[in-house]
Length: 141
Image (cartoon, rainbow, N blue to C red; front, side, top):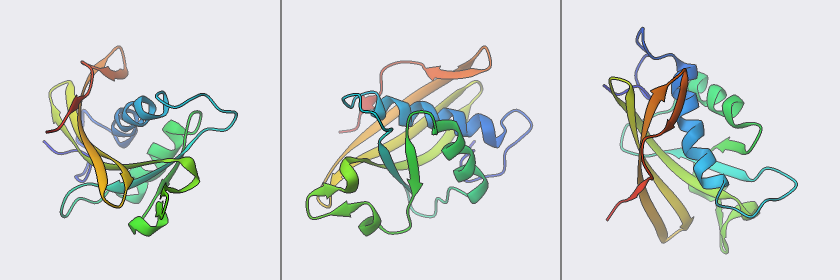
């Protein structure tokens, strides 16, 4: 079941999905050197026809506000300049959250320039009313 671009069902609310995406964003921000201000994280939808709706966008921004300044973009020029990612930030293309019971899989591209990116697959599990990584993310070939 796809829950990012589809309507939430009775077992998954928008907040639940936003919290799963927040775990993915946190994984990237935790890899940065600690700074006084949270880093800017530019986000676009990954995949043809996928749209992260406004309600879910707002929930993701709220779920990440303590450790990231998430900005959803419509065009890559909003995130990239000739030196790479603007503002020394992070640029992620988030795929749909595909649910299988209490587990969710999210594919994500980390974009570092107009010509360089790395694909990742995250598996998260819902335990004790929180999402956590099931295992370390796997780099896509």
